[in-house]
Image (cartoon, rainbow, N blue to C red; front, side, top):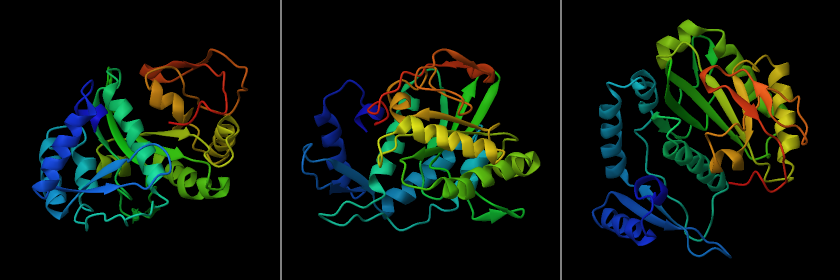
Length: 278
């Protein structure tokens, strides 16, 4: 929240605002139990906060390129508030926190011109038009020189098997990509891209993990819509040339040109095991 709303200000500014919102019933405050690193606090929307937020989001997106996809996603916002248990960190929290950090980096980077960004859990219906839908970790709409671009984000921490990545992501995105009429009806866009960020919190070999996921994406027919990057690089410098289309690189590669339309970029790989931790 400090990076997104009050950049350059003291942390106390954010703390005061959150305390006021909590006092008025818009959010609740949860403290994460950690051994080191101070006392991280989270602001969780209450039922009243969710209702107000939903109305504001739908209203503010009505005239934007994201209007149709926001309408699709907002059908699921009538949910109970998230309640986190005291003294216990849920398994999903690290992943959600990292996804949010990536989106804030996009928001703070002028090159992306973010029109919409969300990291809602399971944002889409389970199925439509005979398709099983992917459930991206984030949805973003960027304005580019040739018009708005729809991006689905997948943040990989190295815990899932390549077979699960293929079944839950590669196969579903590949099937959706060849149905532009369905995409336009549901999302308001005929095409989309999938940006996969990798950190490999399990084995600490993010480049190897990235290469493995790129290979299964190519084998599953999704290479045309998927591109890959180390999560730490995107978090630190989202507008830099850090993305790959395929697995054909090694840790010694440098400046291999990618054909990526108006975001054409070069890939510079001088990887270390610690480079991919947001």
